[in-house]
Length: 240
Image (cartoon, rainbow, N blue to C red):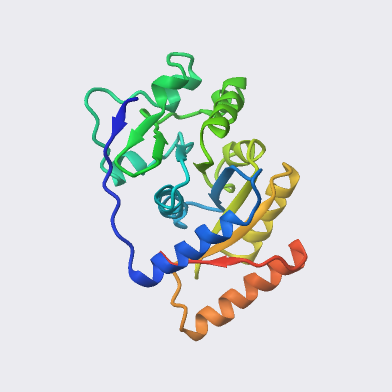
């Protein structure tokens, strides 16, 4: 299997502990929860950071896990994680276009038990490719080969891609940025996930000072709405 070496920066201790709690809670979502979508309402809420570190922690805990980069329009993973590979990277865009096969686009990484399906080239309009049966076939094959399939998706409010991808997943984690994401946007995102029958596994409140009064007020607002919408399930919190 081909290999990609990546550079993942360490998190501050408090943030790492919050991410670790998220990892533990994912384990209690059931053995059939394998294809997990990490999504946000709008860009710059931290969904890619959450995706990478959740995937890394699951892999290092002994669960074979694959990170799938499905943000075909504006992916940041290749650049942010400083991918290194001998030769050209053949990624998801090649597979969906029919130019490569499954074994060509899944890479082993320098993270123990960690694998990645990268994006090679950004696309202006990938919607038609995402609707192709090959997309569902890829995720189903990954589900068979790995315990967890962590999917980094485009935001729900930007284009239809996010909702389309959500319809193929077992559940979603919604990343909400403190001080930026409105209650209206959160409500819309929850409704979009509900419409495509994608179960909400939890919410991550990102970039927040947990000891501040603003945190108590802000989390209380979204936690209250989450409980009203989903019948009292517990939302997760994490910083960046």
